[in-house]
Image (cartoon, rainbow, N blue to C red; front, side, top):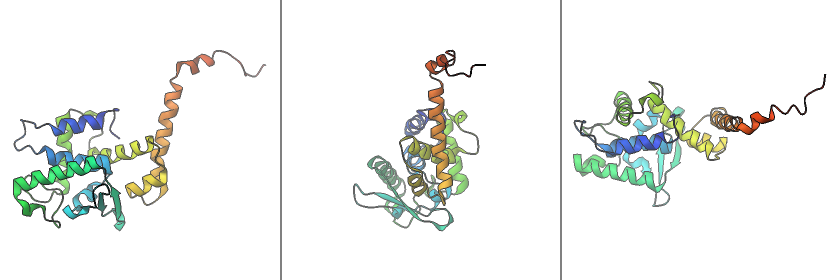
Length: 212
């Protein structure tokens, strides 16, 4: 995942600010891409497959219909904050390219010309977001987008989600993949306990040691 407790928040805040160095800034679109990965855990291929109509449901019951890996579709519930980010992005897109650009069957994510984003373009977009936020050193090169999905899963585990819940939300084929996030979190908890100085003091007491 992204290294640093507040790194996801730093990334979103930095990208939300218009950057005068950009030739054609579009923060609404960039934040929407990051938010779908960080708050819905979507893969690169899943992001590219989204249509405007993929975001559906009544207020309070909004969802993203995802064409998952291996032909396994899933429904991803989304909260009001993410729904507002997507609505702001679509509004900005309509202003740029006209109302016809947001027809239900059109690609949800587009480039600055209004054309559907492709794999290389999406990867470049995410890479540029890291650079603008100044956090490129907090995730291995080549894993920029996957790190956002990984962060989503790790935070689910930290907040108490079960392996079965993580499996359903991420579209994993088996519990084994999801269990990894639970085990990572358990390891982090053990490391935190181990760092307690009082534990080290116990080592000097000598109680309970075998007497030779």
